[in-house]
Image 1 (tube, helix red, strand yellow):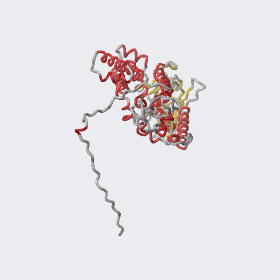
Image 2: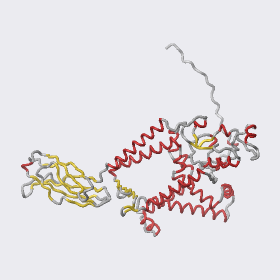
Image 3: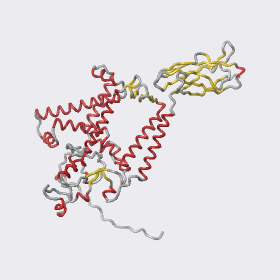
Image 4: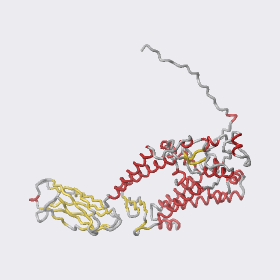
Length: 479
């Protein structure tokens, strides 16, 4: 303990405060991003993918299956119809498995190809590009939109802005109606909404989601991706050196600088110039407004717009394409990307396992639920025939979508007499409350509490083997 801990003297850090006289103190919460139109292979692929996504989203709620809406998430009735499958609150574990599988599928894709979900399938990205398309159609190109916003308000600017926002609201309203149509019968929804006969709740939800779509895709745009969406924050934890992401090849591109198209590539290289001509098109086409040449950034959504823009410039300059491309850190360093690696294999194995468990859960799911409740008003009563009677309330939930006929029987209570009808019919998705009474000769009762089971099974279709046994007790304390 006699040794002294060495102490290093550090000079205090000088804090440089900004000179307010040299800066504009006006706070701007967001600088407007004017996205430039781009064409290319990835852009065409993204549009194709977006068209498929939009088509599925718009068509699914209109599909009919077995006489009802194929997908109807009826929260009020607490049941989700998904084609031939009906999910109830009791099937919460099944929904949990679905979310788990979706999460690990996202982890697997992110580890392999980065944020391609954000760039090609995310609704926020899809609707943002739809709104940008309306901007270009009504207000013109990127340069024309900038000039339009700099102009004072006149009739030309007014009608263009009004038409643009009217188009945005129309798309948002249609989107909202389609979305709400997943939770309420969509054919009635459209008729009632446009005839002003919808309920206040329906109108409220439609207007709320209209406002959200209009605000997110029209005004917030990249703010949703960079500041609100949590995926942008934790997606980097799934990246490794072999993950394919949109990246700039600095070794090939630097030193960047403008040059004449007439000058050969070799001549420019002798001058110390790389292949990047510093045209800034990669920045202008980026929906989040970043410069991919600054390296990997969490704002990048891997949409590939900068790849198409740069490839177009390289083609005009007669340079090889791929200065900006989907590549990995390993390839940029001169190595070979490892497709099969422990992290990716691990996600794949877990995804396959979880998918298998989900399929097993669906295949072994019994579309019948039975609950038996004793009459609490009396423990038992003695009939005129001298029998001991217990009264119960039987609840039968038909979790299928077809009408079923069930047979009710008693197991484990020898000599019991079933009083009443033991055959019931329950519609698909309905709950039947059915009173039953059991009577037995007191001389056959050997204990105060006798355990037994109520068996309910389907009898209308010999091909369906569905049965449920629910335990209960028969009471006779005076035994």
